[in-house]
Image 1: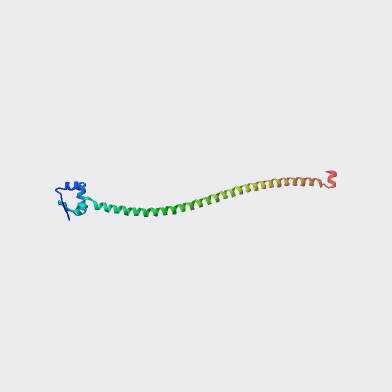
Image 2: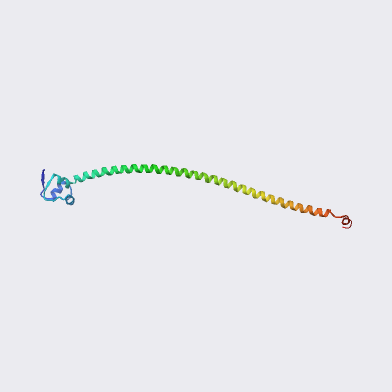
Length: 153
């Protein structure tokens, strides 16, 4: 095991290319006493090389996690697209049904209007027929005068 000696914290921070604040923080994290003499392992910990390896592992884990999530989201998107397609088909079906119902309602309204016109015509003819019947009845009453009525009437 090789030991490295540094006369000051400033020299150590320059050697490791980190700030003094970072150096104190890393020393506290790894329970390293800043005494001036350091082993290779302590210098690696203080320089953050192990932290970088951990970060690389974390990045790899995150990439794996992202890939899993990405696959899950792709499956979810596919499922949602299918649902949307089914809903669009259903909406089209309902729209076609509504158009057919509108057509039927229009036809029923036309038939109702024709029925009302026919009823009006029938009522007019009935009224005319009643008037004609009344006239015939009056003429018939006038024509059935008895012999005496004709002679003296």
